[in-house]
Image (cartoon, rainbow, N blue to C red; front, side, top):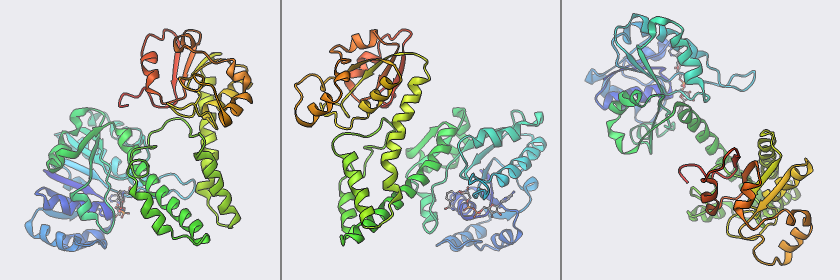
Amino acid sequence: MKIVVIGAGYVGSVTGACLASMGHKVVVLDKDIDKVSKLKSGKSPISEPGLNELLKEVSISGRFSASSDLAETALDADLVLVSVGTPTNKVDGSADLQAITRVFTELRDLLIRRESSLAIGITSTVPPGTTNQVARKILCNEPQTSGKFTLSFIPEFLREGTAISDFKNPSRFIVGVDEKQDADPFLLLRPDLSDRTHIVGISEAEMLKSVENAWHATKVVFANEIGRISEALDVDAGNVMDLLVLDTRQNISKTYLRPGFSFGGSCLPKDVRSLVRLSELKAVPSPLLKSLIPSNHQHIDSAFTKILQTGKSKIGILGLAFKADTDDIRESPALELIQKLLGYGFELRIHDFEALRHDLYGANLATLQNHAHIRRLMHESVDQVISDSEVIVITQHNKKYLSYVRGELGERTLIDLTGLTRKNV
Ligand code: NAD
């Protein structure tokens, strides 16, 4: 394929050199003529291990060149990858899309002059929505471009310092498209990755890239807060975290990484609070840990708002205990949601498979005694709760509820706070 990579930065230079080394004919394009002249002489404009050697090799092969003229280089290209920068807009923290806007305006003018259709992929990191609401809009605002392009979002996950091996051997190849056939040119681009290619929607692919970086940042900040607190307690945080990552069942795993309802129960809330208090006593700032309980309550408030927005008043709650297969109702988020709904005058019917079944003892009994009004709203039959309610709210990720809510619900609204009814569960 003849490929044009726009942007000769950390992503574009590596992408261009690697694709040329895989046998494609590549032109890397930049508005910065110093970068272009460096690339033309087979040298890297950035510092990246192995890149100078790779550029020298692909330049000699005749498959790699550089330019600053889009109109000339891309007129007969099969595929364009847009890898320009999307830095922080200093005014409000949003992504500055000026370079994207400029490139797509140039691409629109190019498409008017082209005879054949061009596959365009954005590999820059952009906020979800940008590919269609900014890039596609620009391309479409000239009627002569109609039918002459496909537009995709191809998130790039390489890391500086190991960029070449990351590019050549990524853990996944994500192709974000609106129409499945738009992915075809990218499947031809990377046939070596067919065993790990995922064709997804554009906004999912855009979101994934942003979320991954937020996730990495969260892990770094978490580990550093643990490091600071441990240091203040004279505990070796390195050892603690080495042990933490050994658990691949709960710690380094999919567990707890699906959006659902708030956490609760007898352990997480109290132990987070206690660690936060300890960090306060040691005068160790831990803003991430400190944000967990408020964010968890915020999630309950969001659930409340969803119910409020239905405009209905008869609400059926499926699940009272903080999770399935336990009668433990201590600090259950369902309990907090129920209190709030009652305070606003909603008419509630509540079901739980375990929380009512047995006699309650100890802390659970005390919790429910404090909430005698809630006990009166509990029903033995799921069907009864559903038939007497206008809105069904799943508050517990309990597979036993699936057969009930997948049945005929009539006019009733289903609000699944847990992700139980998502198709891949
Ligand atoms: P960079 O700033 O190093 O390079 C961007 C290049 O685009 C610059 O050389 C600039 O001159 C060029 N450019 C800007 N406007 C142009 C235009 N109108 N025409 C031609 N060239 C133009 O950026 P980068 O680090 O390569 O990152 C590029 C994108 O990829 C960003 O969105 C970034 O978030 C994302 N990304 C970066 C990395 C990374 O490790 N650096 C990894 C994955 C994704």
